[in-house]
Image (cartoon, rainbow, N blue to C red; front, side):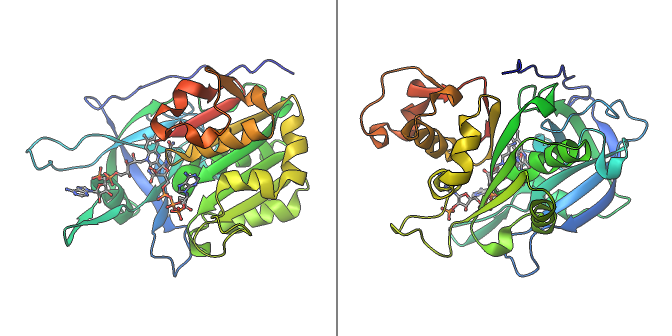
Length: 306
Ligand SMILES: Cc1cc2nc3c(=O)[nH]c(=O)nc-3n(C[C@H](O)[C@H](O)[C@H](O)COP(=O)(O)OP(=O)(O)OC[C@H]3O[C@@H](n4cnc5c(N)ncnc54)[C@H](O)[C@@H]3O)c2cc1C
Ligand SMILES: NC(=O)c1ccc[n+]([C@@H]2O[C@H](COP(=O)([O-])OP(=O)(O)OC[C@H]3O[C@@H](n4cnc5c(N)ncnc54)[C@H](OP(=O)(O)O)[C@@H]3O)[C@@H](O)[C@H]2O)c1
């Protein structure tokens, strides 16, 4: 297999103490109209800033929401994954995008709206935001991306980096295998679905697998999760995983990686993992919070979960 060499990246060109002001150029919904979950694609103009040509897809940008928290201190920075390709949204180096879900919670009959995500979702073209970053040095495509196959796992807005990565790979005539496995609660939560459906139709080497968790159930009554595709679509996925130049990327909710790693162990694919401690016969005996003591990602697996 070719060496997996990650590109050098610059970090924190703009810090929270010294952010840069950028302008919103577009802000549109990417969930289906009827979804109660609102996820928006937001593009910023970074022309004339030191971010131009210096942010890679897979990295994150920081947003400083205006105003103060309940302690009277300025709101802290929130990170958002870049969802445009490295050469910029619409091929323009001055445009950078992200994918933001409005967070909403109810506690004791009181509704809480997440500060930064709702601030961003409300913005209109022409509005200005304070941006920092970039951050992240490992969740990147390798320097020689066309030497590998990719298995991209995403839950929810964890799809953000893959939109840019897939655009980047295929705009340069990617010939190897690329699979996107996307998990969300309902069909209406499929993000950028039209784009990925079209990619699936147009490219024999691109596969879009959907794991919709709250509609139908699997034959054993369990939910369709991203990791269950490793069993349900084994005929497609195992031969790709068995190649020695395949890389796995995992992005989204904390905990999703555990299910994927368990399935890789079951299918005897240890090259994607570092087994640190002898595993019990039943992997489900490992408590979730102790899992990392037993299994960690190897060089061939990239993880960004929280
Ligand atoms: C590396 C990285 C990349 C990320 N990329 C993305 C991305 O691409 N897209 C994306 O959407 N997010 C992403 N995130 C998450 C993002 O950074 C924010 O954490 C998220 O948007 C929530 O921020 P917020 O300010 O809206 O919510 P916060 O104000 O921080 O609140 C968090 C949650 O708590 C609830 N809440 C607030 N106060 C209370 C209270 N008193 N009681 C009960 N509940 C309360 C809010 O409703 C909200 O759901 C990323 C995070 C990381 C670390
Ligand atoms: N760069 C990053 O690190 C990054 C970027 C963007 C987003 N995120 C994070 O990604 C998460 C996604 O949230 P969301 O609201 O956008 O997602 P969402 O739309 O609610 O979808 C999450 C999906 O994952 C399923 N799921 C739950 N537990 C799982 C498990 N153990 N294994 C596999 N799948 C599981 C859920 O199923 P059920 O709910 O039906 O059980 C649901 O179908 C958030 O925590 C977000 O902050 C991270």
